[in-house]
Image (cartoon, rainbow, N blue to C red; front, side, top):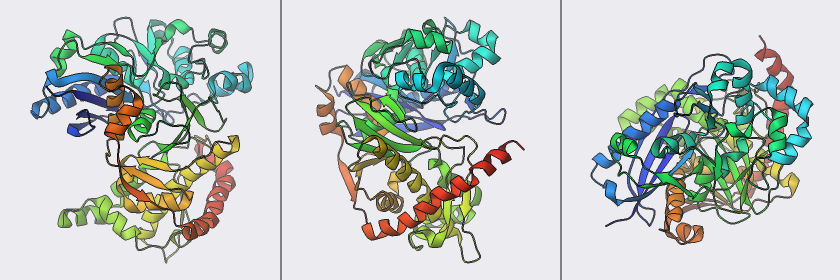
Length: 505
């Protein structure tokens, strides 16, 4: 009988479920979408039960293909988007939609705690600055603004831990998602009870901590009935989507770096110590005894936004040619020289995370004139996202963390042009692994290590990850880009106060 691993990814716009054999070959995969809600300015929410319904349908769809038999599945791993705060009661009922990683409603709470408790003290324990996008402030928002929800809450769960709970009935907190909680000690991997008291969040509101590859339970009869899985199938704790994607991209050694091009873009540098920077993000890797110094951006969805709002030509051409709209956009942008003839795009389409941490930041096209075309705008969007990546890399260098080659993942890695632009702007070699399902593969690898299918993470990566493309940087182009990069930084600094003023109108 084949040994099959199931990887489940709870993304921002959809869940992805993929079944892999022991060599990392995709046997079947599917995607199910769900909603994002914007009830008020700065509020960005999702309904965790919509995630669960999407997961159950996706699993059934995979099993219905006949390519995977439920009895062949030897383990299940789940990864998820960061910084959820899902309030559930003792029976596991969801008490409120969860604010997601783009939500900035808790800025005032953060400002108050950074003064009262001390920004330096919080950072010294958690390795992360207290920002409204993190889980900590969202829990406190419930406490201050929805006391009826907070008081009924038994535990606050993360996105992946909610799905593993629905599968097993066990409430958990994996190490890699611990970075969303500022009472989580980034050096020890345990809760700091004294800081928890100072922040006003009792530790008993948080689940027990588990290693990401640790088996937390087995599929319950109830979950088996809903999903079609076999009752008793092992489930591991899982982890952060970026960390699982980092694993699935083959990054398991200090100095290796993952570059992610998706709705939540950025980079993850693998380090063997808890090296923190106040403008970056520090988390545990899903691989034991390693950490990830991360830069997280929101601009990865900019090109998708452009296609949806302004890409009528590309959509119509796609229907005529059989190509995707993104392929046609690539072809258009390829005709434009590096630097887009001076057109620069700030990809701050939902504020921005690291390294500027500004919820009021706005997307900007700078340098428009009558000579600019749609193709200029497409290329400028690609370059703007690459500048954001480079900004994070340069920030990491401030704490003596160096980046060698990058391993790319996410939808943007399918674009040869966009990947080459990133190589040219960063001046780094970019490797593109053979699988574009790095995140679900990483979740599946966790299940494979946890169940003993693989003897180690090194064994798992050697068997499942290979490189299909290598992009060498054009250093002449890099020098040209650096002049535009200086302007990119200056535009934000000059407009920062104006952006803040406009957000209050």
